[in-house]
Amino acid sequence: MKKIVLIIFTLISGCATNGLPKIEPVEKISLDNFMGDWYVLAHIPALIEKNAFNAVESYSFNSADQVIETTFTFNKGALDGPEKIYKPKGFVIPGTNNAVWGMQFIWPIKAQYVIAYIDEGYENTIVARDKRDYLWFMSRTTDLPTEKKQWIYKKTSELGYDGDMLRFVPHN
Image (cartoon, rainbow, N blue to C red; front, side, top):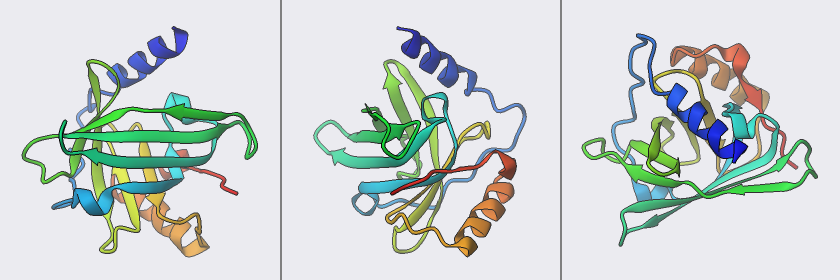
């Protein structure tokens, strides 16, 4: 029950933007291309993922219900730590060309999920929030060369985030 209360508090406290400009979503997302496994390589973590290792976000579109079935798995505390699994549901916000979702861990609350960057091949993405409280850089591979780390810091700053808050997620 404590975890549920903490998650609710975290999501509700993330609703206000503190006067910051909105994060601009990408022009359009192909849900077919976006679905599948994404390795979380860097993030400004939410409460449940502060000590995550081997983090993977997996998406599958349920066209019958118009829901993005999501499975978030990670090892807690170490590369070989206990596995944690969360199954939030994503809902595309109408009129956003699939680039803004409401991510629901607990009904009825939907946390903002803005796809702020996607490369042409759907190999790397950045998901952000208007409040600048959380951010996720995800890739289809765990390979993260130094120049890509530098690019992530730069892009994070361009989006109005404090790059010093970034945590690079270890993977094995």
